[in-house]
Image 1 (spheres, rainbow, N blue to C red):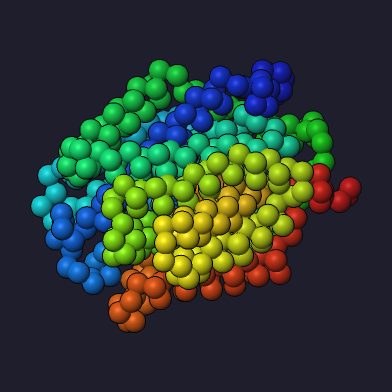
Image 2 (cartoon, one colour; image 1 turned 60 degrees about the horizontal axis):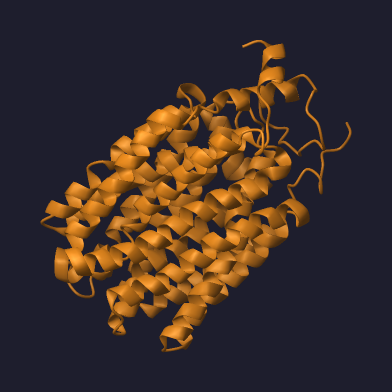
Length: 436
């Protein structure tokens, strides 16, 4: 690929790449549907269907711990692989990995099989969700990153919410295992077919953007890229930069890790808590679904909002609002109250979630952006595992599930304060690099 060809042939922007952008948007909807099918029926029926003893909080959380550690690690791997094999190949690998999951659920004789299925789900999510996000960032402009990630997460988490509701009803009509088999196979097979037929590899767009920066041909305000990193860094160099050497990236990474405590809580403790309070599977699906719909739907606006007012404020506000919503869950006893607290939690998550990724994208150079996103997502999704472990331990020690809610609420408030103190505005227009 020559430099002149690179500059001429690869235009960036949603409008210029609309067809491929929409294909990637539908892909992430399917990714969300795949994740969502495991989030309502499985936890609620852990005791009756899969033999988890009542009150075994650590065993109950085991599948989320496995998911978090596997998905986090595979995010890291996916980012590096995508810069060598291309985004499309990694996406396809993720979908093929998901094919056995519905059959494992159908024939699972014990909870250990569900944990194994969730490990495969972690591989699937680490590869597919990372690639849909990275691919869209490859083909869009810097001033569209908030909108791009907002749309990506909007589609994905609306998919999670829809799947939670649909699988709740399918479990009632077809049985838990058969309902998940039918739903899962339709989604996964459709995703593989669409990837093979219509998805393009977007790595050439990222290389074109990197070449423009190198040649001084990029337009608009210059981002505040980290200076203490080489042009083509090693895996370790990017990892240490994201984890502690750059205070801005470290603040973003720790916030990503802590906010996944909320998702671990909602994945397992919400259905169990509501089931203990007498709600049916369909009603649980709706309460959890409200969280997902508000989270997903609001990101359509909160991502675009950050393109105007910056990333820092929405991230900090979102961490604090989300933590308050989690604590509210325990202060009422009606479906309306639980739905309201779920909605507030979802709105806080919508403020912070796309803008953490957008902040990384703002200050990660195109040459290593895929790796930076993968490492941020490594730390973020490790929060599933660390959060699930912490929730299981504190619930086991206290004997009550409510202690987990307070743990998450306090952690979110403290993490937001860290971003406020350590972080800075990353949007190039609002905080550009100095002229020198």
